[in-house]
Image (tube, rainbow, N blue to C red):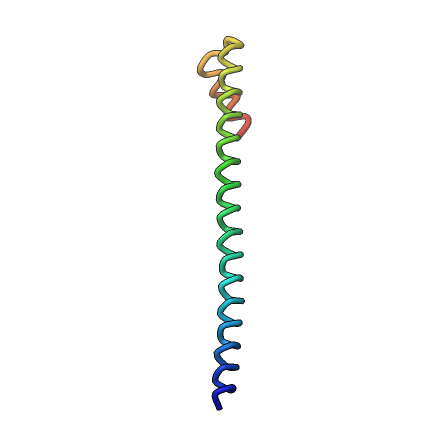
Length: 73
């Protein structure tokens, strides 16, 4: 009787550990995706800033810069 109880506890613990491992994997993956998305946004923002600064250095007017940005979409 006691061995049956211990076996069922052991099975429950194995299942709990498996589920926790799956959960940890999912959470880690989500965290990596969020981090990558944030980094991508930051890089895109820097590229846009540099592009605008280049347009200013070229002597374009505000309206010309606005038009170029709209063309890029």
